[in-house]
Image (cartoon, rainbow, N blue to C red; front, side, top):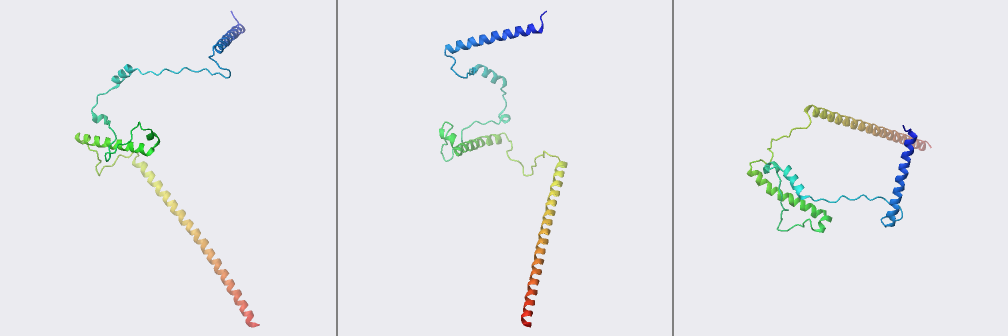
Length: 202
């Protein structure tokens, strides 16, 4: 029966042997030129790129669904030509740098898709426009919208009350200012009158 101290000694000896082996391997790698002086970090090997066409084809066949076009609504087309002017393609180097040309390419491609898809939808007798009286289903319930409406009405009335109070305060301040000006004018008039009376008496 071995004690814990014996186990610790054996583990310590194994670690020493492992570190010595690691040192020997490092010295060997340094001699062979695989290591350079300084800090060395172990490089993880990159996973090789795999293009397994057979596996990809098999997976595609497994997940492929042969659905009618109306279920997929997929359109593959080239950008629409306007006035027979061809737009730059993705291969053009300037397209990556020029936002306007790139956006115009997306826009024209969308136009071409619409011009292809709308006739196909009409041929399937599927309406592409909403009726005038169409109302989408609300995501929020009527009760919730009622609460929101009440909140907005309350908020609006609060804002109106604050505005009225602010105007009243301004009017009071203006009234006080006018009253002070009137009092000052009266005092000035009184002092002028007193001065003129004094002059007349002399």
